[in-house]
Amino acid sequence: MPSAQHTLGTQTFDATAGKVSPLEAPQRLADSKEFRHGARNEDMWMTILTKSAETVHAITRRMCQLMLGLIFLGQLAVVILRYVFGVGFIELQDAVAYSFATLVVLGLPLAQALDVHVRVDIFRALQSHKAQLWTDRVGIVALLMPLFGLTIWWVWPDVAYSWSIREASTETGGLPGLYLIKSMLPLACALMILQGVSSLAKDHEDRRDA
Image 1: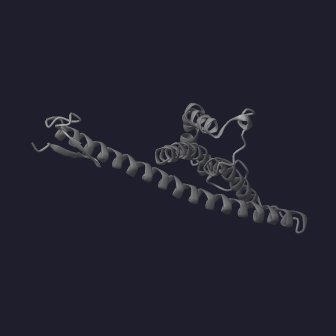
Image 2 (image 1 turned 90 degrees about the vertical axis):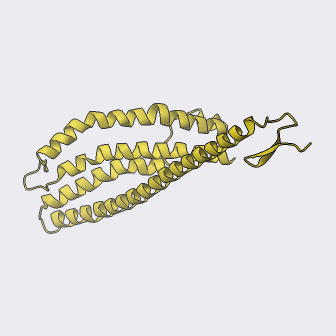
Image 3 (image 1 turned 90 degrees about the horizontal axis):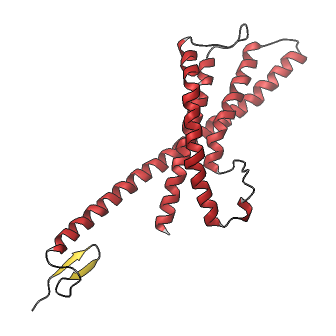
């Protein structure tokens, strides 16, 4: 008597051998296809997330490099103008201050993406690699995301008010656009959350491929 066989994934099940009945095999096959389709969708979203985080990281890194150059050149010009020519330049001083503030807050997600932020966990040196990974996961979910999410919620009214009045420098004759600089704080918080989620996604992919 010929055996009833159905292909499920990459395996062939013999219904007469008692592994899968002829009535169950088509449903198993459909379930397998649905599972693979869901896995492909998950892979697609994981890829989109990680690629987006990498693109944002590259843009943030370029901005930090630009801010660092502006700080160096701007401060050098301020010192030369003041102590060599006896000239004050409020707008240039504000530009240096704006660049420094932007560099500081955007440096947070940049360090998170590069994994070069300062760690204060005194037990990390004694942990195994697996324990370190779990510590990072718990830290991202329990600390990073809630902390920076609350920071966005806390500073948002002040940033919104600054935008409504188009807040400028407090110095007489200073630069406009202080509201843009204040916007860097919630932006940096959002980028921190993005990099945290991206780290979890990469960790998930590594564990699945292992």
